[in-house]
Image 1 (spheres, rainbow, N blue to C red):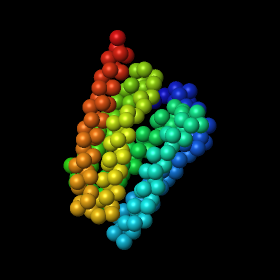
Image 2: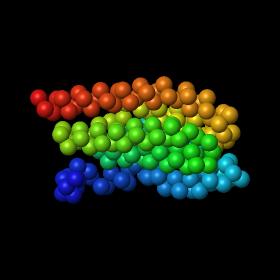
Image 3: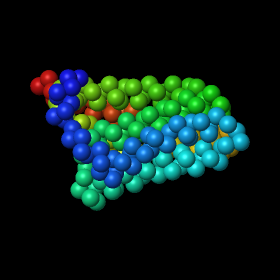
Length: 188
């Protein structure tokens, strides 16, 4: 992407909005959460950090709307932070807590496809595609499954992961439909 075009797309002062600061804090908590996840004796610390990080995801959007600070930067930063958090957690849990690699591969593939689709939509239409409720439900369901994997391993985590596959599949279809509609409109 052209750096000059990027400067015009975002007002970098938006990074100081409380909601965007929460999103940035979520990203900053990630290394500590991943570190704790890799040590069985620190699983409660990992649960606390990851739980706190994902709580910021639950409140940042409401804060932005309440303060009338919904911003292009926030529309981009929040879903990217979610994907980085979920993807890094999935990889780490696959390595150390029995989280299935097939699920990690699906999650990574879906997120790469969403990011590439979002870039294509932005390139063609100059709009930032926003998250769909099905995507938010997927993030919540995967987070719950991952928290259960940290707390109790596959015994509690696997049933939650299987349940998370329903909103996961729905969100993949919704985002695919949005991409087809957006790119079809751009070529008309």
